[in-house]
Image (cartoon, rainbow, N blue to C red; front, side, top):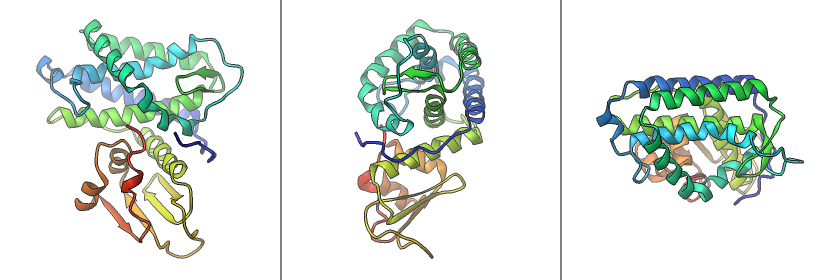
Length: 265
């Protein structure tokens, strides 16, 4: 796992909280209208059905409450930029939990309503500086909430891909936080300043070893949109396919990011 030496950018905790609740609300509203047949559809996540994916989304948010129930750590030992590289280690456990939660909660609307109520209560009761003993390590609550924007945006996209005609909207602030965190993670994975990665309107990062660009037009430039970037960073789309479909514009000898992606899976 790359060491997150790069200093994480700061996020407004009020905006992040609002974004998480807004995107979760978008998911809840869409899921409430799904039929049993739609909930049984397969997803691109292995053997998960739509129902199991929804159960996982709930679990991703209720994790905040589970971590708050643990003893308060003495000091932080993980950063926000450590999180994207640590998710794969718990993938098997998360899959098992999703299956069990889907079986235990046949009424998904009631399940998600309870999670939303608990999440709001936890965020009201605890300051963003409160340390959580997460599976990645000890980090402030406000930082962990930022990671929930990634969970929500990525899995909203998974739901839209799984259910024909479903078009769950993306909260702008949630999409922005997700884009920035995954872009900064790329800069951690491939430190340097030879390549500029642009994901308008939310993020620009410098990465990849080589001559550092200082002025004028960078010799190596990659540009894409936020959803394509999220799909590349999480392995939903391959670099080759995105380039061939003109969803990525890449110029320069160090602009091929295919060997660096995905960042998390």
